[in-house]
Structure formats: C-alpha cells, structure tokens
Length: 115
Image (cartoon, rainbow, N blue to C red; front, side):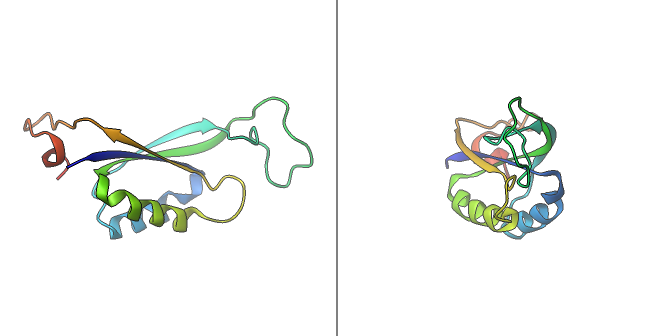
C-alpha cells in the first residue's frame, strides 16, 4: 500500500471544522503546527488597495496527515469544501509520496504503522 503525506496550510480559524470533517472520512490522526507565512499576495489582505513591497507574515496553521494514497482524492475534496470561502487565504494542499513509516513502539512499518 502506498502512503501519502498531505499538508494543508490555512488560516487559524479553520481547524475545528476541518478536524470534524476529516474524522468523518476516516482520518485517524493529524499533526497541527502553528506557523507564520504568506502566499503570492505577500501577506496583503484582500481589501488592501496596494500590494505589499515587503512580505508580511500572517498567522497560519499547517495540518499534516499521513494516509493511504487511495484516500487522498476524498481528503482533497473534503478539505477544499471545508476551507473554501472564495477569498484570499483559503489555503493550499500539498501531497507527496512517503517511502516508509515505522511505528517505533512496535516496529511495524508501512500501512501497518498507520493503523
């Protein structure tokens, strides 16, 4: 079984709804990091009248999931529906392959380490 890492970067206010919706589709674990960052708008708010010349770092959160690759399309759909407002700052989803996962306590690896 192939394993994927899904990273979601979004605003601080979205975590609770996203956690609930991901639980409904079988996600059993996640890591959440508080971060500062900005995207192509360099931290400008949507209502700003001019573009920032210097990046302004805004509070964000990064949610990291390790899931079977076949669950990724469903997770992407859930995340997009949950985070979408149509405004700047809705977030980004990054998906990458994971070559192995090892549960230190038991020595299990691969998909067995995720369940």
